[in-house]
Structures are given as structure tokens and as C-alpha cells.
Picture 1: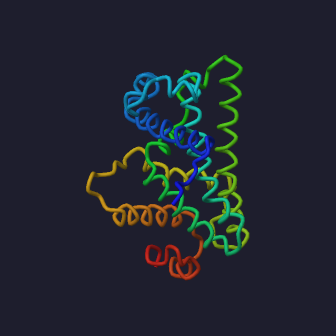
Picture 2 (picture 1 turned 180 degrees about the horizontal axis):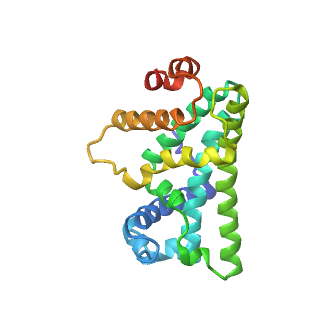
Picture 3 (picture 1 turned 90 degrees about the horizontal axis):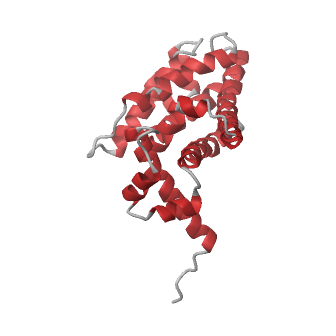
Amino acid sequence: MAEPVISNKSASNASRDEILRAAAEHFMEYGYAATSIDAVAERLGATKGRIYHHYASKADLFFDVQVAAMTRLTEAIEPIARGPGSAIAKLSAMALLHTQIILTDLPMQKVAVQGLERHLLGASASSATKRLRSVVKMRDDYESMFAEVIDEGMREGVFIELPAKLATKPFFGALNWATVWFSQRRLQSAEAIDEIAHALAAFALRGLLKVSLHDAAAQSPTLRDDLG
């Protein structure tokens, strides 16, 4: 039986993904300043030439970790946000999936959530400025999907009446704060992590509810047990 053929593009993408995950772990543990191409290569068990094949600098690597993290979130959440259903059903599903990704892909997501370092925000190089704007736009577009669904819920009369963008900030704060305090234990089960995700998503959703918890639970099968 013939062996499956792996294209050069697929192999390159797999190599890039491995590099990004190793880099994310190092950035998460040591910060931007203490991370180097050599350190990422050492963690990966590869030569730094393998890193430079994909990335010209540490800054490029740092930006791409954030792009990859935001791309994963957007591709997972957008079908729910643009799909059918009541606002509360969609937002509960979006919040749950967002939190599940945060907790199960912590290094990548922590780098994305906690943002760019101050010295990168003040970078004068045009290439760095362009990358920064690209990442910021991805974040803004992602938050806008939540703001639109929250606005739908306000018009449906189930969410408290606030400017949607304002309401989105504390909603994300409740979910994303997990990148500060959560640290997966070596023997922690997937079920235990999923319970945390449900609890956090339900907590964030409660802060927006205008209707009673029991009425909301009936409309939100994803989080019925948490809200009921």
C-alpha cells in the first residue's frame, strides 16, 4: 500500500505550527524580552535555522503567535455569531467555546489576550507598525461579533441596556481573566477544564441578563444547568 504523499506546503505549515506553539510557551513563561530565537529553537529541539526559515525576527514570531491565536478564535466563533438562533443562545455558545479554547490552548491565547509589549506598541519601524495594526484590527473585528450579538439581545429585551461595545468589555474581562489565574495541572482532566469553562461562561452571561435566570436558562440550552 502506497504511503500518503505530504505536500511541501502541508509540511511547511506543520513546521510553522510547531514553532508557534513552542514560541508561545516561551513567551508565556518568560515574556518577550527574555525570549530569543535560540531559546525557541532549544525548546523545540531544533536548530535556529529552522526558525529563521519561517521568521526573520523574534518580533515577527511574536506577532504571528497572536495572529494564529486570533484566527483560531475567529474561525470557531464566527459560524455561531452569523448563524441562526436567539441572541442569548448564540452568545452563550460563543462564550463557552471562546473559554474552552482559552483554557485548552493557553500559551497561544495568553499571548494574544495579554497583548503586545509596550516597546512593541511604540515601535517606529513601519513593518512593526503595520503588523500591529493588523493584529489590533483582528481583535477589534472579533470583539465586534460579540458586540453585535449583545446588541441583538438588547433589542430582544433579554440583556441590560448599555452601549453594546461598552457591555462587551466586562463580558470579555470575565472570560479572559482566566489567562491570568488559570494554570492547568498535570493530571487535570478534560472534563474538569470543561466544567471551569461552563462556569466562567455562565458567570459572564449572568452579568448581561435582564430576564430572570430561569427564563434565560430555558433559552440557553448550552448553559441551562449553569444558569438554571
